[in-house]
Length: 198
Image (cartoon, rainbow, N blue to C red; front, side, top):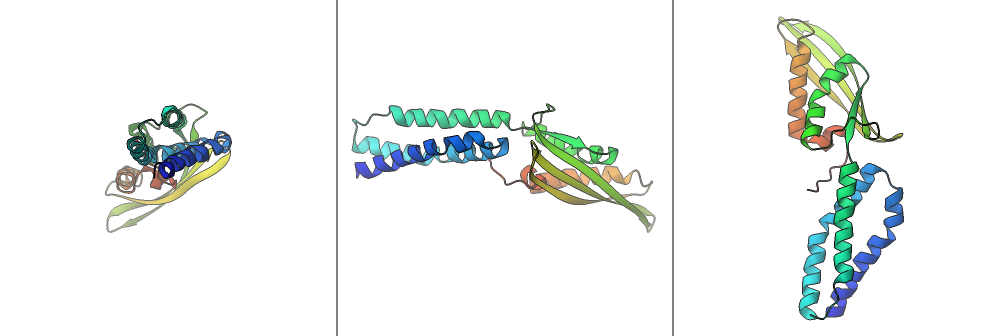
């Protein structure tokens, strides 16, 4: 029984080591995803290691502890390198994407540096008036780039209404977009696969 556990642990480490060259070549978001998934597997790995220790108290732990340290270290680096900046193409998309920069800052994923992943934001709007209300129908188009590679993105239709004028509809649209981010979550709003790893 001990051998079965030991073999399983060795296979996890061998698989991890085999993927290292591909990991180093991958882009930042992909590196974050992969290192996060590896980190999420550590509790199960440690449970198996505990059983192996009970079955054989003489087991040498150095290799297993080194694996755990590498996984945690790799995740910390990948998380540190994962940050975004928003590049609006017009005044309207700058205002509309402000709740997004706030959400990124809260998640510690906001950085204005040029090597960050770029979120290119553009927008268009159609106005009309009905029953005394000014209605603005905004289309916010988000595209997420890791270097030159498009890795995600999503379009959001946001409606704003005001009794005052067309310009005031934007304030309502910003509030609606803030609520959308809170409801759907940051990753979904960006059109990226969610990976949550604290």
